[in-house]
Length: 102
Image (cartoon, rainbow, N blue to C red):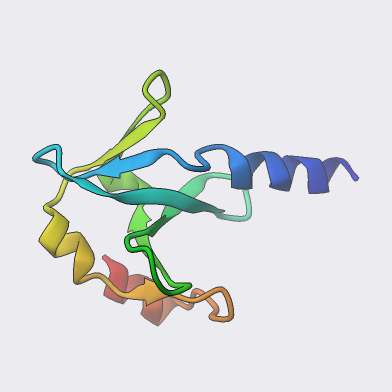
């Protein structure tokens, strides 16, 4: 049971944080958090539009989290992030998919 609580806590850690690009332009909001086997944060899933169920995965090593403002700043432009592969809840994150994200 403790691991389920931990998983829920991780999934909700940045829930609804606003996401901005490197120029301060709003991109979307955090929808999900992906961690590796040792609970190290790997990616955030960002909803970038009002429509659709897909998220864009952004590697944690290019973001800076501001917990006081409940926001995330990506060290890249909005256009570049929009061009990143999107992620559907039904998909698996494979090594090939991770290569495309980076």
